[in-house]
Length: 208
Image (tube, rainbow, N blue to C red):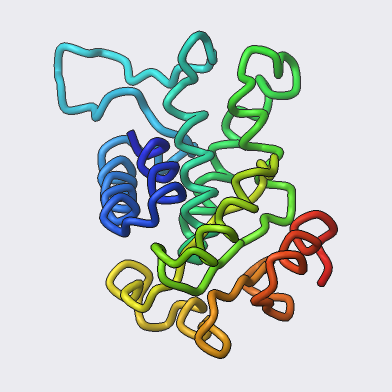
């Protein structure tokens, strides 16, 4: 559900979906996080009839909870600069490190999460009104490309309720009243652009 909510936010930019994803992640950590060894249990440990708290390791037709949780934590930390969540993702990867080394084909979604964790994640931010035609063209440019190691954010001016007053997004604004694209890594951004062709080059090459 959290994975779907993040995707839904990146498609619609409705902050309620991202807010819900953040709330679910906080609850997941409270209920299932293994403080001692990292990773997430499949159960809360409050049901006395369940004698052993398991951690599923096999990504079958559906990926395991841990595989999905790692990707969610990495994506959300790249959006919100929550370093604690990134550390939890890295501890989970370490907890399953032996399986990943010996039999990576049994956990393909975890492998994808590991790849995400070792890449420089692109934070693509568009400052503009979501219903503006030029904003939509910029969003379409992002969605038309295969960019697995990226997160996509829209700045309209009401993000403080989700990201907080100190978010780096606060400094990213439209230029001359036009929708403006920023391509960032580790919350450090290249020069912004209002031109769709220049934005396309940035996405293709990582340079303005």
